[in-house]
Amino acid sequence: MANIWEKARELEKSPWPKIVTVGLVSGDHVLTGQRNDNKLWVSPGGHMDENEDILSAGRREVLEESGIDLTGTDMHLVRAERLVSHRTGKPFVVFGLIANVDMEKATGVNDPDKEVSLWKWVKIHGDAPELRAEARHAKDDFILQHLRAQ
Image (cartoon, rainbow, N blue to C red):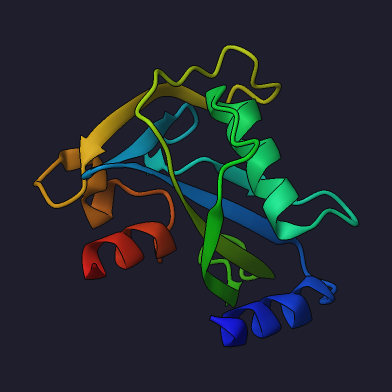
């Protein structure tokens, strides 16, 4: 795992916008949310603030978007990649994290951006429509790829 962190540390120094996405896993379920703008499904996450580290950004984004506090929860980095947006053609960096948590109700009531209208726990290895590729906001969904490979 040291290799992925080395890669992440290099990517943290890059000039491109940085995004963190966190897969919240409870047993065989993952938390997913439906975006307001395009009705597609996402894991909690968003843009990292300047000088913010990966784990702090992940915890902040999860708390803001879902109301779930990851203080004291281990998070594992599963991907760190430079990508080019299929929407804008601009480069950005994505860090994918996984956190094992107890299943709890998620709410976006305190989310300043109000990006997600509905949070839902769905079975990872089932045929949930929310986890189908065409229903996902991220064209290359690091979190689901990792979870389904296990």
